[in-house]
Image (tube, helix red, strand yellow):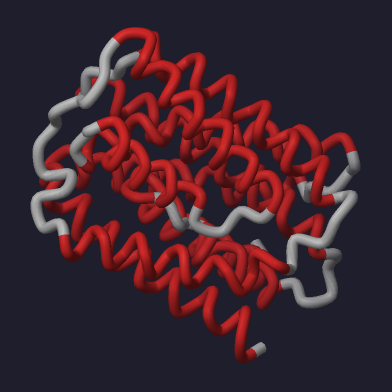
Length: 254
C-alpha cells in the first residue's frame, strides 16, 4: 500500500466514525483526499469519497436498526424523496454555480448551533410530534430538501438531517441519528451513481477506503448506542462548530 493510500485509508476510518454518529465525515475525508492527491480532478476525489462513505453509512444503518426501533413506514418514502432531491440538486449544479451557498452556509450552521445550545433539552427525549401520514409527509419534506442540498452543495447534510428530525419530528438525538443514516444512504447512492456514470471514481482506492470507513462507522454506531442521546448531542455540537470554522474559512478567507 502506498503512503498516500495509507493516509487516505486512515482518514476514511476516522471519517466513518464521526459520520456514523452525527454526520460530517466529509469534513475529515474530503480535505484529506484533496491534500493527498492535489493533482487529481476534484470530481474524481468527490466520487471516490462517496464510494468509501456509502458503505460505512449503510453498515452503520444496519447496526442502528438492530438496536433502535426504526419507523420504516416513514423512512422508506423519505429516503426516496431524499434520493430524488439529491438527483435534482446534482442536475442543477451542472446548470448554475452553487457559490452563493458558500457564504450562506456558515450562517445557517451558526443558527443551528445557537438554537441547539439555547434549547438545552432539545433532543434529550424521544417524543415524536407526529404519527402516520403526517410524520411521513414531514420526513419526506426534510428528505427532499436536504437531499437537494446534498446533491447541489453538500457540506453538513448529515447534521442537517439530524437537526431537522429532532426539531420537526420530535426525535431524540439517538433516534434522529439512526433515521438520518437511512436518508444518507439514499443521497450517497444518488451521488455515487452520477459519479460512476461519468467515470469519476477510483474504484481500487475507494473500495480500500470503504473497508476502513465501515470499521470506523461500526465503532461510531457502537459508541452512540452505548452512550445514548446525550453523547450524540455533544458530538453534534462539536461537529457543527467544526463545520462552522471550516465553512467560514472556505467562504471568507480562502
